[in-house]
Image (cartoon, rainbow, N blue to C red; front, top):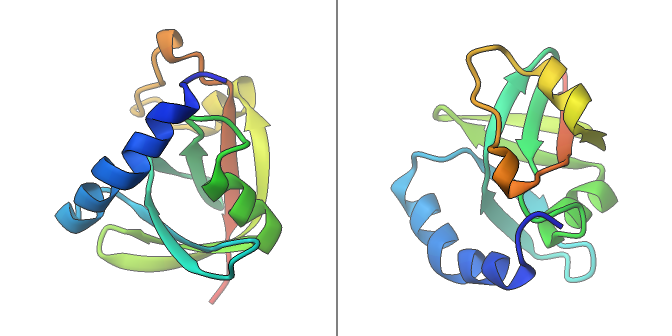
Length: 124
């Protein structure tokens, strides 16, 4: 796992609410797999051919990743608009980097991020 899970808990409780309130980050809305509650998570999201790619900083065992995989869908608020996404799947670093445009900065190797979540746009 690239980042310690305790840091993810700090982010979830302290920094995420501020990031959502600031309105500058893409925000993924997803449903809890056990609770059924609606959650909003600010994420590093990048448009790719036919959908979006998310950087999975804390690994695929993160609550938000497990929620999205269980629900098989989520909604992303990006650039002032909402997009529906489906067919979530974990992809590796090589596949993710091929999908990203050259202008997108790759996560630093120091973070040891090897998992990404890719989702497809749902046709309206």
